[in-house]
Image (tube, one colour):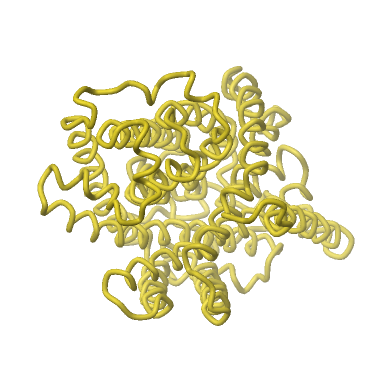
Length: 485
């Protein structure tokens, strides 16, 4: 199929720094500190959480090696869709694209529940009203050029990392037991019953680090995709390990689980208060902003998946349009489609009267985390099986063989731990069949995607032949600077 310039994304508008910002902002360090780490301590009682973060960081980093190598070579905005189409076959590509849309959308819409509940608790009102306000803000920014979103995400991320750094210093400076404890890195602390749940929650903290792959068509340098993604994984892994260690030191490694399970304990803000009372107010404000910017990051990724798949005819072609005749603005069709889906999902949960955090946020974010982990595993397999024409002449053994194999081995263990502990992650009663719905939804989505690809092969062979091959050639799209002139 032919890709026309008028449905191409802007070239050379995303710098390596901008790519890193999107990956880190999607993961939302403030949300992980205030929600993820506290919840993990409370539900798993694993004292070696810092070491768990280190080990999970290694696994996620290995999984991103093959993913980013493929993304860099292919240059496809719907990264998983393009990767699996070239590495495993066109039907696998469509299946991956559908799963990615479900997973990213689940995480993005789950944050509306968290945002609404957070502001309703702080300022009063109904959670879905606050969620509606966030929906307007994210939708308005989503149809604008990506540079604006990058500046917004970068500002919030910088302050968030400063606050997490202050938290670490405050926690380590005033240890609960009179001295800094290293028990959080004790290997024996991994041999406990809650380790599977801890691994699963640690993996969930990294979801979003892969989003830079969807900006490859707009990147100044494709090679920066690998550097940006892996750097974000390593940096965030260090940040999360340090923050969980500081929390254990500040409260006491054997007392932190009990304190974390107590809603009145005020973790992590009571520790941050030691650095100065003003920082508690700033942290509360930045937590709200961090949720919004994480939603915005995922919104932009989903918009690019919809745009890229529509550009190739896999999704309705009407979704493959941008918002400007200069061809350098956002994928408006995909952005508006994502906003519409988010409105329906949030509206459905609001109408059902469910808990926006205990049900909406927890279930949807878990669904998304499992889906994205499956996709990272599949991308590593695709890297192993990719033909020489995809790998290129300078294909390295580490990127295309060693790291993907290690990633598949480690990622498979993590996936088993996540699926095996899905009931405890959701707070479901033992023996409840409902947690099985999450992997069933992903399996059904992948199956539907494969069936749709089969339909395209029979009824629209020209579209099927173009699956994963719809990115424009380098000189088909002018650089943004040339357009502005």
